[in-house]
Length: 419
Ligand SMILES: Cc1cc2nc3c(=O)[nH]c(=O)nc-3n(C[C@H](O)[C@H](O)[C@H](O)COP(=O)(O)OP(=O)(O)OC[C@H]3O[C@@H](n4cnc5c(N)ncnc54)[C@H](O)[C@@H]3O)c2cc1C
Image (cartoon, rainbow, N blue to C red; front, side, top):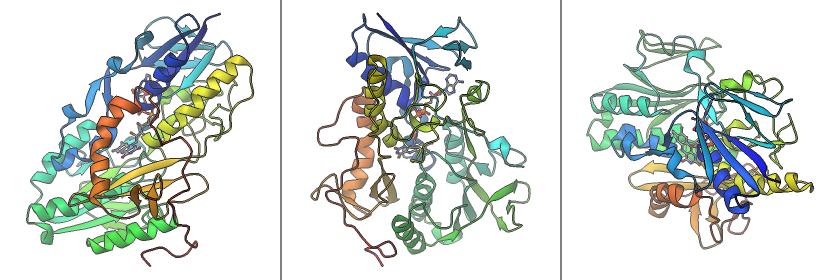
């Protein structure tokens, strides 16, 4: 019998899942079909570098259809909705697709229009986001002519993709304006809804210290309710205000809108309720979820998506074979944090262990929570790794999906190496 496996979304998670499944099953055992709305696969970590002229949108985009192994069907259409009762996906164009197993990999979308005033006066003139190729390119032009004033980086609310990216933007902005010789005329402010620079305490203290060292003001607990681009003001729900001459905003995120049109599939934000260990959806036993689309309490990051892939593909196999599922996904995430001047930090953590100092993946690997040139080179090399190892679904020797403990220094909850 040939299993019909349909994968919704051909980004990071959908592509690596399709390629791993294709290696697992010969054509005669599984028909694998990926659906996506366009043929532009964006290497999203590269968006951080576009505003600073360090890369260009055309250098981080490749044809989506070319990333799939032979024998994977690709349907280019927007998804209209999923009918969980009938096991069918309804497309904007083309006949419905029936499935035995569905993998949801449609990621997260930006919803800037949900914040009052954000896309009003000043949008793409003095209010930008680098979270889309168009926004990142427009911001590059604005930064190049910014001669001084207050630049505010604002995260409207969590969850967002790659929660460290706005911090990296602050560090790179400090470097960029120093290179241009105008740093003394630029005030940098980071405005976050969190109660610190990051979600986890040890890394949060380390990153807050680095912001301070680089002269970036940190405003915490700020829940942006409105953005007034004409006057240059962020206004919080509690009435606090932060003025700006240039705003770099990470807008609210939600799941793909079709999730909301699919009865029983999503939550109020259109993310998909998912078992955080098996990656099986809570909506139906034959629906699995990978990447940013899931509501699991892990970071919305490509690294998480990569680590999830191994467990998810094994669980698709077990489900089809009638075996109990593997509950082995531990929330493993890691991320290079670019800090400017050719250096970067690395953090590695999971559901239970916060980012700690030490080395990755063993006692002699890359330094954790510590700036180094090696980490910066790792960040740059990651793009090659993404196209040639992560998307093709290759296993990396010595790096498994479970977070390694060897190499990590356990520190008491309220201290850190830097204290
Ligand atoms: C600025 C920035 C920097 C980042 N930096 C890092 C980093 O340094 N490290 C890291 O690990 N992660 C980073 N990330 C996050 C990482 O890119 C994402 O977590 C990862 O791509 C998630 O993969 P995904 O498959 O869930 O979603 P995506 O890769 O976004 O794919 C979702 C796909 O679904 C498709 N889709 C959505 N809705 C529909 C529909 N209705 N019909 C048809 N198709 C649809 C989309 O077209 C898209 O191709 C960054 C993200 C951003 C924005």
